[in-house]
Image (cartoon, rainbow, N blue to C red; front, side, top):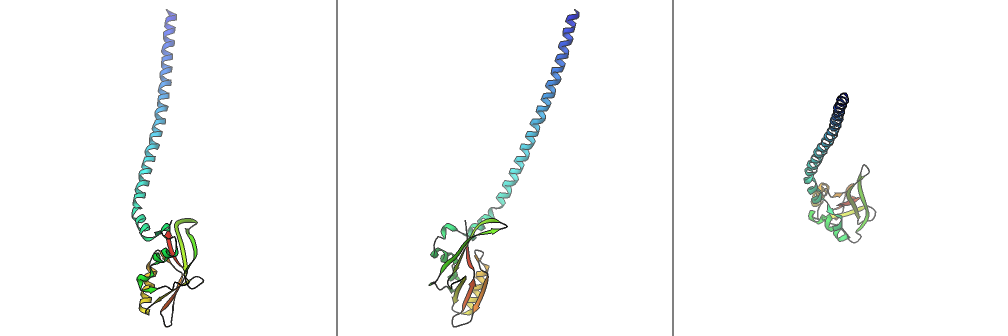
Length: 177
């Protein structure tokens, strides 16, 4: 009987130890699953925030596409001239010596922006000559050129003479990649 009682005591002790081990293992498993679930919730929240920020960029992307022509559309001199569209301001560009003198990517802080500058000339060097019928038209055209976001230039000089003329240094058309 004593042996039987010892066996029962041993069985109870073993059952208690097994219960403690199972409880402890279950608790550890529960904690690990809780950490995984919490990290999944955090990742889901970060993804939702990123998606919301990305969707807020949609108007900027539309403006980007409307402002800068695709580089694929500007594959020859005729397309560059068409993109410049200086005739809409009442000015003309002597075409005899028109050429592209530089094409380079635009960078900011070492990062390429997805834009290229296509710089043109028609008077040799880095100047573009533009002419108008009168100085009033020439000045109005200069203001309009300065407002265009897809065009860049360094300096604009008005020349006196029989024909109202302006020389524009480093005149470039910006196209998107």
